[in-house]
Length: 340
Image (cartoon, rainbow, N blue to C red; front, side, top):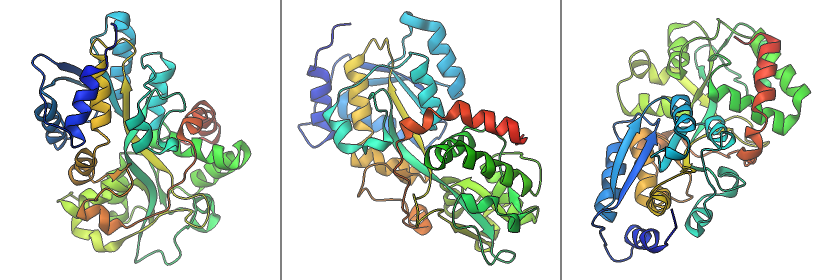
């Protein structure tokens, strides 16, 4: 498809304060693994502001990537949205995304939160931090490397090594400290497990409440959700749980991204670019935070009340595109140390 800039420019004008404009027959085919009901407002506002109709196909991130690969040049997908840098990089490596040269995206998203080749972009972030039982732990770990300290033996709950969040965390440790230190860290954490890795991030928080463990690794938005709403096994005991943003005197806390990119064979490329640019607008960024308790990627955007309670933190500004390249080494280390 030959690209014309008219649609994208007009859509962006509508979104970022220009004249309200609509299109008679624009559409966007969105493949999304974001499964949050609160995203409905995110999509409907884009449709209202631009006249572009969003057709959604939802599913598991890995399944959507495989589907786009199988569809090849005939894929109807315009945009892929998924969670975690590992999947974004997997999509890039699979050749199902294309570069986007957008002044809006480059201006609104920090360089370390987008692909170095401009094929994927982060639109919201979740810090992967430590939570602990305040009644049992008086000296929680302050850095990621501290989690492997023998003083925490038998105290740690974590997800399995197949979890993308853990894979990306270890990949970031490789980038910041090297493979040898990362291997020592992974072995030390395994030695400190209170139980076999199991469940999701919320289950790690429940482990604190039940007394199965004293320290848990989880993304911030799972805890913020328990502050905002009733999460069984967590919310009623929220005052029991403390938290630490790791490595605040060093590189900063590791962040996971929810992000996306334009499909390699997008039939509605201009609408796809306009949609990605819209996701960086103040209103869309506020939806990410208010609707799903995530941290915005655009500095200065207002955060939800629950996210504000978690507080500010120094984020690791490591290039997540570089981190993603360490994912195969991270999985190998997990296998070597027996992190199930």
